[in-house]
Length: 443
Image (tube, rainbow, N blue to C red; front, side, top):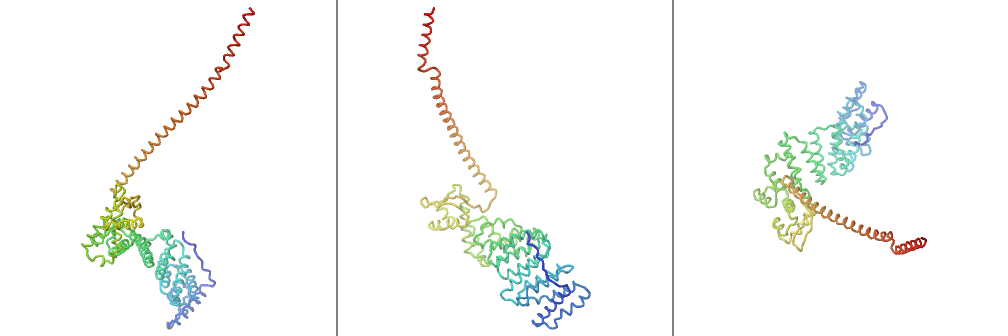
């Protein structure tokens, strides 16, 4: 969502304010050594003709002098010029010139100049309609000012809104490319390598296949690849290898393409072969050999863990793959765990690394087949567990039924004895016999 639109409330008619600003500009220009500064005289006849556009052209051209305005008057003077521009038939024709001025050093304020420029640019950005394409140019100017201050934190909250702005402005791919490159440079200058790489990738994704082999594209592709290689926390190169601009390097820069292939899917042995074959390449390309050597070792161990079918690696196998003494194995395993490439547990007693999770560097048909196999094994294991649970459940049900029958039999046995008369039965028989004897005596 775009920020709310600001409104500048300045009293006075256009003519009065234009004359006031013209006089102010003439005073500044005179103080800075400009001879015959007479902006007020230049706009006088134009005001009589009610030609606002021509008046504004004169004011905007002379407005470069505002960068020399005293710090306390700087924002107020620019706000007055912005207010006048808003009354033009086509204000958008003036914003690019104002942004150009504000992108330059503010000579009147050595310490607060960047803050003053950002304040005015933010005002311009916010008074424009959210769908106004001029916002794009204002934002570019803001990026240039932020870059001069190396203060990426000022920009970070705005980047969350960038995708929405680009959609509102209906920005073409060429303009998006320019914007992403500017953001990437701001991030790099501020030491924000992750953000810089992210926006370089976005820049490359705006480039069509027809433009993939152009010299400009090749420069961006090499810049992005170099950043990915040198970033000690970046290990996934699949986001690069799928881009047309990177694929084009196979023809124009085959050595760079070979190096990318090694870090995408190969291991330490292939990297050493590369160094022997292309001796001096790293130095000429501005690549740090120590950073790359550590990274390829980490990736080699990650590949070794991912390819292990037993989910355990002997120390000896790790030592051979990394070409290190076995005494250093645990240190390297811990290093790779900290890098987030694997998870597991070291067993000093058995001299093995038990793998809980590993990262696939390349995920293709082979890896899908392996995952399918592991899922099938897991499925069979679950079926076995379910069968055991089902069997135990049936046993429990049968046991409960048997217990219930036993209890029922006991209850029925006790009740049957009572109903059959128990000890009272002989007494009943004796009474019946007495009745019969009386009956006989009566006869």
